[in-house]
Image 1 (cartoon, rainbow, N blue to C red):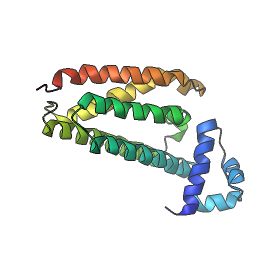
Image 2 (image 1 turned 90 degrees about the vertical axis):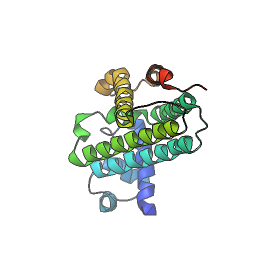
Image 3 (image 1 turned 45 degrees about the horizontal axis):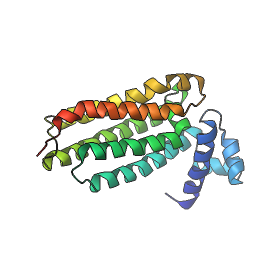
Length: 200
């Protein structure tokens, strides 16, 4: 990605995080960048394309940090899983407006739907990769890695939506939900995996 697009993404991300997707205009982003709206449209044909790149930017940053947890796995299965959930919780807190906006109907165009599907598949594969590593190390016993990775992803996504449904509808953020989401996700992780951990 060229430097100009990176700069646009950074500025747009600040606006989206503060005001949400629907209350941010391309005019405001162009003003923040001190460029013309036409110049902004040269790089992004519409707001949906910009939103897609912003979401991908945040997802790539999160993915890189989660991969560090996996690479540095030290045979503490639940500790590593909790660390990944805590990392996601920090991102959720930082990008809370993006989280509640991702469920709005008006941004569900084909391009963004494809992006969300791709991100979901990447997340499930990352979980599967981590679970597979832990199984190979003899730290946990999981029979069907695909099913467990998919189910764990779905449960955690549902927990996030459950706690944020009011915020999603109202568009008014309540970051106190983030702590409750993390606590529920850890509780579910423990319930799912505690009896699968191999003790020596």
